[in-house]
Length: 447
Image (cartoon, rainbow, N blue to C red; front, side, top):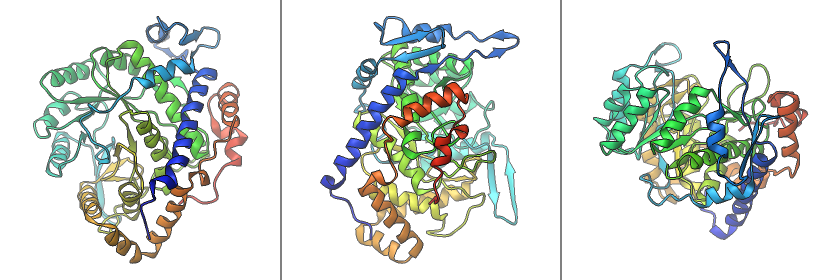
């Protein structure tokens, strides 16, 4: 039986965990910092001097670039000062918002015996906008669009149908100009950016250049950090959440140095994954949802607008297992809507298949119908739903144990993680799979 936990029973534990995460993330940025790569492109070195200068100039030693190690180090008090200036009261999306997310590269239709994959086209982008509008989604985000295609067209197609806040991935000057044009026309545009390659390394220079231009033009930016457990991030739930938050803090500091008036959204996406040469994403599991919830809870504590990943599933095909949709999706919807508290927005909550590679419109419709049904249930209705499914009842009971005592999966590991970060970056070139910390912490059960 799922029950709402009394606030006094869980708040102290989650608050303490979030405070530890904040402190440790600042320590990571102080001692590890952010690596400025020495990559080559067309036989010439990429020049990152602009972002280094913008990040460090005028900070009174709050951010310092070490030319010997090519790392930018951030003083904890400087990060805290930037975090203290964050606020969410003017953000147009309310708390506890389920919405779309992505981006999937293909449209999936059919079942295991008979299915096909299509490249997303403008008609699919139009269909996604209509789906968001018809179902009164709190925000719109293109769920299926192959990168490099329809970057400019997506703005016009979506804004003609959907009138709420819109999140777009852009990679070119033309995309930036289109985003600014739509913002000037009265639309609330959020641009999505991945400016780090985990662990703690600046991404491709073209990504940095687009980020700089968006921040300068005061376009709201969503900073997506995506470390994978056992690969480019620690194996442990706390460790992967720590890396995701540290990278977000660094991006937030960079944005504030360029234009402190630009709105920044925490799009951290700590991703559960099996280690090894053939990794398998575990983004539909209870633990994956808890890791993302910890980052969401921490953001809420800091009054930072945030969007985390939830309700995703691992399967390649859509299965009508429970409430006409996939079991993992339903399980996560119940977690977020009926157990978790203190979060802002989640993405990936409908329509996705095969680790977000495919997007299914049929699954999207089924997922939204299931979500609306769950949201309509009171405690008695949720109890009845659990009573009729032994597996679901068992998993929710396990989740409730973690919720009441998050230390069951979130072990701070004291000073160990900082050493693991430094050793992995300096000795193993950022590959956590080669560190014995990963081998020692491979869980026996992924649920």
